[in-house]
Length: 89
Image (cartoon, rainbow, N blue to C red; front, side, top):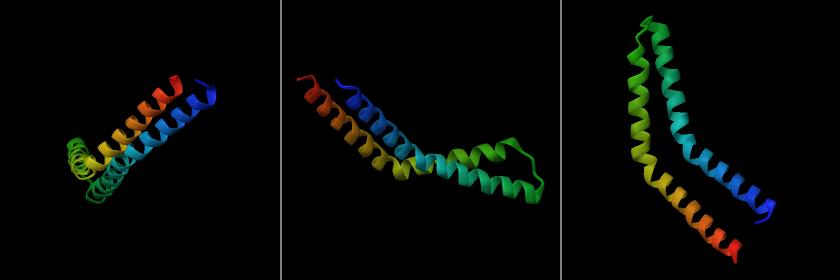
């Protein structure tokens, strides 16, 4: 296996990781920002107020985007196994 092939597999793996993780991270970021603005305006400083909305939002995002995330991962793995078998011959 050439170094270029290894770098290509690594790059593709990083792209898939960022693509699959981005929706969860963005939703968590947006909900955290909204909750912290709400806490600043109302001067409520409760730790669970930041944790529970993020948890619920990430779970809802996983339910909505889960099938897409699984299909991206399965597609990547099937391509990886196909290319790996091709590279060993």
